[in-house]
Image (cartoon, rainbow, N blue to C red; front, side):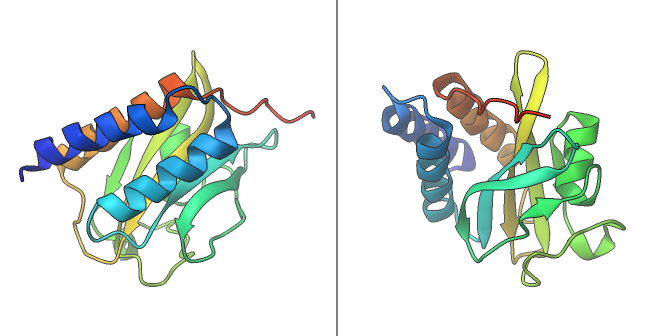
Amino acid sequence: MSVFAIYDRLERQVRELLAGESDFMANGANFAALVYHELPDLNWVGFYRCAPSGDLVLGPFAGRPACTRLPAGHGVCGAAAARRASLVVDDVAAFADHIACDTASRSEIVVPLFAGDRLWGVFDCDSPALARFGEEDRAGIERLVRAFSEATQPPEPPAR
């Protein structure tokens, strides 16, 4: 099956799985589990939401226990959030500011989440394989995240 066909199938599954539900926790948990189990060579997938401090705080995920809070602008997740754009890292050991929540991770992709213009979090995928994520994966995961975002009410920004 081609990479494009895999993402076509997964997008249909995401839309069916999340139909009729808009809660972030419920949809985030199911979305992370689906991606984790359906895409090969992943060791962690999940969400980090933006806190008022600018830090990223752990949300629903699948995989080993993870870092609970990532400092604003740090790591691959923080860099993607600061750039407000997806970020693919072929070798996390070569990324100067990588935060190693799971030392088995070798490559990573992070896709920002928006409600209108408001950045409210990121979706993160890690792999134990070097250069796991290509251009097709970036486009495919962005499609999946778009389907997730269309179905899901983002969490309310925490009170300051």
